[in-house]
Image 1: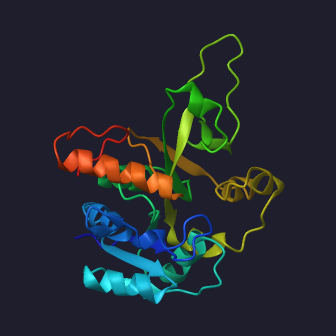
Image 2: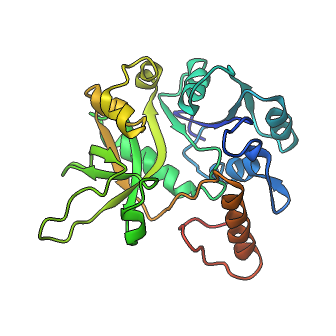
Length: 256
């Protein structure tokens, strides 16, 4: 198994919109277990660790055999939790895997890792997919990304970019899976928060505003995060459909 890539799943209990969601039950397992088991299918991850500040999540991780590390409860973001885990390890690449995406596709993780490996001038990588619905184009909760000809990010925005002046514009949704070079990640939290990051409330703009390059690879995977109890019900229905008859995923390319 490779040892050059560390995967970290930040998970906190005190979510403002959905407290305790990491332990919400989905077909007999807590959500964090679904995330861990699916991410574990990625052969590129040499280590996979859950990072939490809550003993209830640590106890759940112990029950299903997942490595878990306690991190400071003072961290403002999941990225800061990932940094704390990465400090004590030496893997040159670190993957931030969202703890509220129980349908995470292991192939998408591999795609993001390879995108950074193939872009030596970039300090981090992420993913995007084609937008096919006008509802997503105009939804500020769906972040859009514009790339240059080297498949590097030019800008991320909640607005419908690029503007299609007289031509059909291919719009891309940002899929929030991140891979960092370790040395860059350890500096990332301390970088100045620029006006664009603050205006858009998009943390990834910090790298661009500080002059760093982000590789962006296209994927068929569409992230479905759990932010509310209503999201949880949709995820339950999706997983049950895959397990009990309908094996075709409705919004992602991953397999259960």
